[in-house]
Length: 114
Image (tube, rainbow, N blue to C red; front, side, top):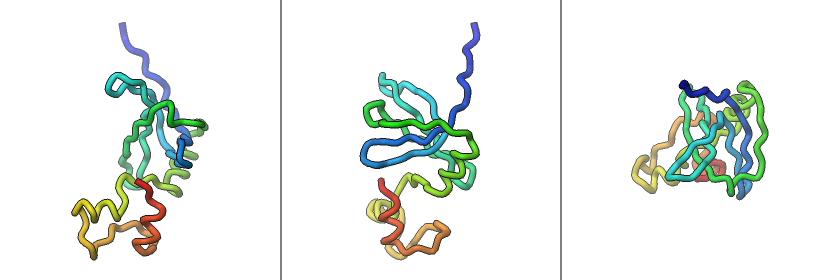
């Protein structure tokens, strides 16, 4: 008996707290609980994975892959903010990651919730 592969689905997922995640979605069991897995595409071709519980979701809008990738690029959900990276000692006080938009660190911190 072979397992059927679920079709690949892409979506804009609206979460409580006015947060939004955009990427490839699937359902996955984590620690015995069903969760939505969101694989968020990054510009370098890699993905960042987030799991969210059903209670945190208030809307899912399914879109095609091109729309999802375009929106994810325009509104990236960074896995770690600059302030948090410095606080954890991952970045020195003078270092700034290559974001590509030329903004200063304070403005970037405001746009990168953790």
